[in-house]
Length: 317
Length: 248
Image (cartoon, rainbow over all chains, first blue to last red; front, side, top):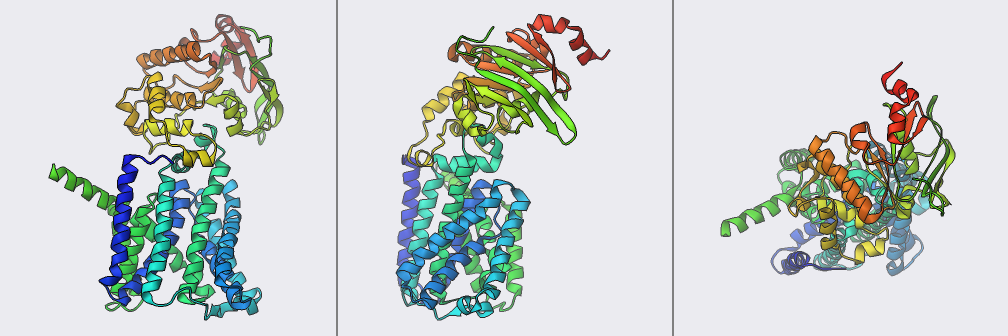
């Protein structure tokens, strides 16, 4: 991979972000760290969505389907069959990638709203299946609780979740800066024109779907072991889906960095609103904020920060 | 110009295309020799673009065969046809709207190999060379398609096609929406590319005056059928062609 000066400069920012976040546990309490752990998982899911939908334009409303496959696979293997989590988690990721190819099949024929609705149906089907098929294994509507933790304590979980999110972020970000990223964006703009420049768009889309599924798989598997349980209602809830979408769009779709920013913004906003708004009205407020931000700045928070940085540079000159 | 000793570059055999009850193309057959420029003309709805769509595999023919360089490519998908050396432009230019001219060319130059797409960087100098070869200035390479005039959008499609190194280029209404000056520039570009790269063209155009100096031979279509074939001067004098264009 050719790394130009601009990429190196951005990698410097990534490094600074990494160092800053690693120092955070020395400054803030465990309560804040626990909030940030949720932000890291949300960022993984939002990046997964962004790599697929933000890039290729195939809008997925079914990402909880992928996250659910990972969660249930590792939960069932480790809890029901005593498979060590060092095996159950990789197995869950592979299972999610296989699920990603299932997800991909409709994309061979449809796109736009129809594709989004089919993916939503995938989520709904898995929701119903986990409730009724082999409830002794899936735990039915109550799900499975008492899952083994990978590490214990807020600080360890913070570092683990941040490390995974950071690694995924850097890898995806580097990927989208290559010509592959450009080819995937071109699919969003005009798939027919991409084919007529000699590209097998099926292969490109399959790659995007598989990578997106792998990221969802990693996030989903680690997430259920962090919270220690999995249940269909929490996993396949429409609010969960919207939170992923809003994090990606609010942060700035097609940027990878944006969904991370969106995830931090949303999680922190929701958690700090909790004392003053303990009920569901919190979601009303966050929905309002998201709506205003999205209308005023559809490119997302990332673009606001980039513009601000540019203005500071101009002012310094 | 006749087919070379090694056979025609492109051969279309008894091509049919039916949309529901509408027979858009009814048994079209023709050949194009390497280095030839063929004009494909006819009134609106004659089936010219449908023929292009079938040659590019964007539409699957109801029946008939398409041969390229002696190979039956009827079942070959679009991207493989492009790799074999066929490329096209569209009636309405289809740039990647949010990408600069340079990035549009980059997509054309990019290999159809995921590993190479990731591991090999873009060749900005080669992108600029291709841009310049179709008449873009250095400044225009960084422009977005929305900042370009129609003539430049046609150039952009040419540049993206040049990037895939075609042998046969299908140009659909390449002069549509252009000023006289732009038509002259695009015509010069086509002649230049043919001279330098030995390109073969099939040109669909309603602008017969612009088309005339470029073509070696013309096929006239009407209601999905070939109604005349020959040199430009011959076909414009043809009674059936006059009827098709002007009515009896």
